[in-house]
Image (cartoon, rainbow over all chains, first blue to last red):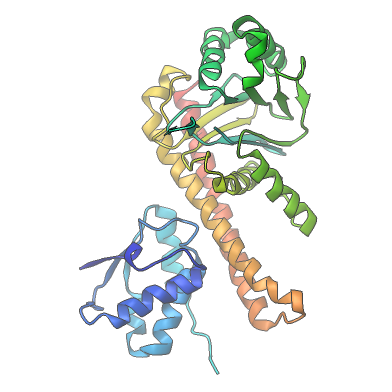
Length: 100
Length: 275
């Protein structure tokens, strides 16, 4: 199952939009987190920055920490090869923020 | 209507323009409004009939037109083709490797030297506002390398997207190393270019989409960094903001390296197909 991120993402700040995507997927019962694929080719490159993906993982860490490893392993369908390389690094290097 | 942005830097000059043509009742997209000469780029704004007439003549004479005589050539061609009363309906931005000139035939008989940065067209007011605002805020205008110059010009052209008469389908011209390069979105219909480029426009567009995608991603990172700098306005910048800006900085460094590689690949490919 491939999720079309454009259905969930608006035009706000990338960290907020990454969180919005994560919240939408966590709220949906039918999302197969094992082997999840998310298509972001419909989103503008200006949105797909490190803060978007960090926002995505941070939201999952805060609400469903048990899903974090599966979320890190999401396969993202990107428009450009350079995006794939960067996203892989961001997902690997993500460290959750502590929150009070 | 149009927006052209030209910026000269240490590694050469870039010019970007949109592809929209507008009337009172309709709009068209995919228009080519920029031509690459031997060592100059010229972009037109105003009546498309007038721009096309000048470009058609320029393509016929292209072998004899260089950065040194391009401005005079354009004025002479406009004199030859366009009635005096209609000349105010067309303007050109001429970019060489070292300077940007405005050709305003409805007002001036000679080119106006605009230094290293200029913009013409209906979107130009948006571009100048963004440029002026950055200058006021002390934000640097990077142009020390050709990729930096491109990323900067792309940022200012993006500011013109607010205009209803400017679209997001772009053409990119580069003057560097004594020659030119032309690429852009696949939707731009290429009429004024060498056959080698027309035949390979889809491939040239793939390079452009990648190059622009990197610049857009850099812009996104910069926007988020500025968000994290903003607490300084109330003296509340904290360690978390510093950390976030370090992350954004590292990302921009990596993307900048990608941009250097991508532009180098494009230019190498282009030199092979357009001698």
